[in-house]
Length: 501
Image 1 (cartoon, rainbow, N blue to C red):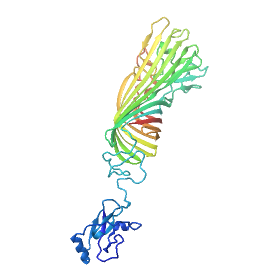
Image 2 (cartoon, rainbow, N blue to C red; image 1 turned 180 degrees about the vertical axis):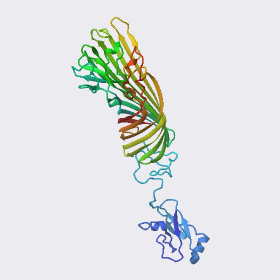
Image 3 (cartoon, rainbow, N blue to C red; image 1 turned 90 degrees about the vertical axis):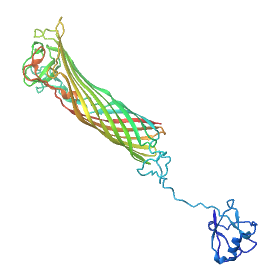
Image 4 (cartoon, rainbow, N blue to C red; image 1 turned 30 degrees about the vertical axis):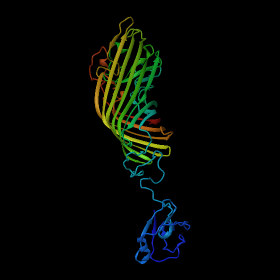
């Protein structure tokens, strides 16, 4: 639409009308053009009486008259055969709508609905394309290379130099005796594992979702074997609660030298054979949690996590002696086979509520993620202690008794305990968006689990030897269940991929 102005003062002849003199009609839009308007005269019928009165009494009228032509750029006829050009539209820069974000948007933002602010923490508008990686459903597969802090074990096997007197062989503190296994941490090596995660959004704007994950580590084991036909000398150290001998079957192995004592495994002319120590550790866990978005903009999002966490830790320590009596004329017939076994096993299960935060920041195709959470709950621990000694004389029937060396009737059994525990965790990852549906990344994770029971901590090295079969307990009831609590640390590298649809 163009706008014309009728002026009260007479002007020279209009350049747009060669027939008669008329007031000059000026278009404000046309005046803004660089060059003069080009028009062609168009004959018109006699002007209406109203406009004639305006011409006859110009001093009494000053009116803005809208005029409009049928075609853009075509001259517009006016009364008395005069013409004025229709205004030619001119582009006028307009301010950007407030709904359009200033600056370069992130790689995952394609459009925003009105009133949606990209660079502030605003709720997602209906039908918007939310920030974050595309896809309504996702799956992550992660290859783990983690380690744990292992568990401690007391001295279990000692070695004495050749020529050591039988009364001193294997006893800790005597000259030349060294601990060759035990008094150390086991099952703390790096081991591979896998973690799988799946989730999906419950709403169109990707503000509320559900995610579940499960992980496991490959079983870790540690083995020690010491065999000898008598030389070198191997023994199993302990603290003797009675300072006395036991019975004829074990007289060949025990010495009463006070608190520090040892059970012979091999000794020249007395015993041959060996001792084996085997330990295992198995760990797995998972969680199921809701995702609630707290803040989302062009280059980042922060989510609240809340749900359930589960962990299970199974560990065991087994000690076995295979002995052959080589002594002639001793209290036990030559050729007698003695097998002594001690077993300590712990199972820990954690069930608790999880709460945490998860954030992700991206720049182009590169992204960085961080996660921190803590779970509060209960650890259910079960400790099982077993022991067995089998004595088989030449040509005789095996005689089995339910006791070993460190596992006796005073501590053999199953013990259940429940304790409050916390499981905090943190993790970071750095990766790249390969395609709209695929991402790859690497990261590092740390997790802590309080109030767990480990098998090495449940070993009581004080033994009342009077109860060794077929003896009867006299004196202090040792060894006993230790009921010791410690913690578990996990940490390691993570390499993974994420698929979204």
